[in-house]
Length: 351
Image (cartoon, rainbow, N blue to C red; front, side, top):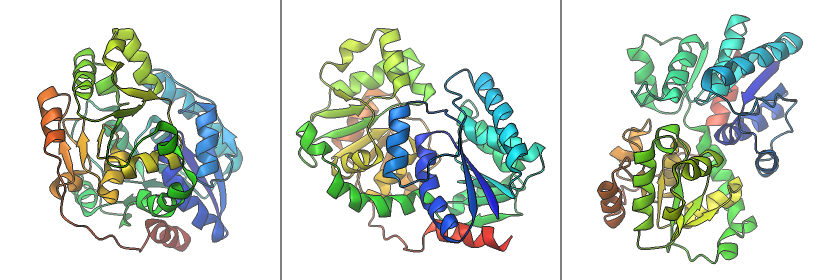
């Protein structure tokens, strides 16, 4: 069986790692296509190495661009690869432009399509990720859902065939690599950080970075926190802070370059709280039992809010400061060892 997997951004590399490993162990001929949507070559190489992922068979080098331009260029190049490789199945992950381009390319060539992390909805169609999710789900043949909520979302949209509740594959990666990070990562020592004595921040979504008021308010709130703030800065965020002339708001924040997966896990695991607009980091905070403040007005991961580990604060300065002051420690949670990648592999091999 030949399967082609399409990835393009760091969260997708994390989702790919456990599934790629088990597919190869079961004799699947996997072809990895990296669109190059995340184009920091050093960080890409580090992530693939840390996550023990086979080197991509194709790196399309698409890079950045407007949504239509970027997705269109991906479509052209992915189609070329599909025509050459003629796989039995294409697998896409998450909700990026790489996801949509891979899905559309497969669908138009009538190649069976599987979507990992299907059924998520923020119900905010101004988010490009929401459009990517909806379109990908509606043309997928196999929909791997991480939660029951995701299954119900699909059902409401009339999608019931090919739907599998398999759990969250990012949990597989977290369980495997969090222990490794405690041994291999030296990021706390390098930054002279004490466990539970700092806040970890990530901001990368366009709704925050490309909006002057939202970005300014988030930075103002961060600058008023009572403990050191560690901010691995996304290239887009850095660019927009400079564009808006907000650099002065970073004076009391420890801004560092983006870090690898192992360093990030260790920073998350030892933070007093995490402030983020990342969906993946919301989940990781939940699994690590670290209080999370989400810098968005809605979340696809409503379970993290319902179980008390996550609070939505958007870009409201007072809401952010209040959430940090009254950190939410939710209900105790026990997680199954029945990993998602195993379930997905079983479904795929039966087809």
